[in-house]
Length: 179
Image 1 (cartoon, helix red, strand yellow):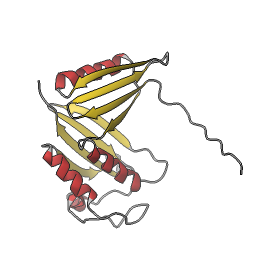
Image 2 (cartoon, one colour; image 1 turned 90 degrees about the vertical axis):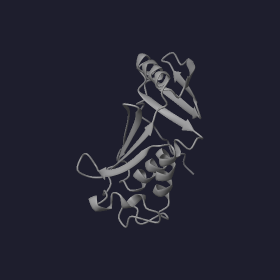
Image 3 (cartoon, helix red, strand yellow; image 1 turned 45 degrees about the vertical axis):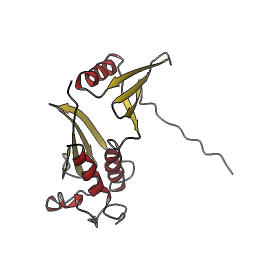
């Protein structure tokens, strides 16, 4: 059996790993000299701004997040759905920003999209899409659970047609703790 060789193009110049546990955020940056620097932050706005500023100062190009908390499970589920309904090897766009006292996470795929009249229904229990590159799969529970978790955290989730005329954009808004 021949050994298959796989090569990757390096796109991550400086990476930051973030681990979220309740009110503590641990971030580690691998610097250009291959040394690691780790810092801890709390979940308050001023501390999150410090984390952002540190990442900018270190010229972080990519962030990887790890969390065992329920706060990030909805994001994972939405990303998983975006991958399921998108053509293979087509990027999924993720945009995260602070808007006033909320963390806004937008996940946009380039799949077949959701008809405008179904954008609210996709969060109903047992609702499944008949369309998609990989056919009908799932139980229709995932996004209803996502909506419940986000709602329990006083957040919101919405679905829209993709910004680029195709696909779906899911917007999650979660409140930030204030100092």
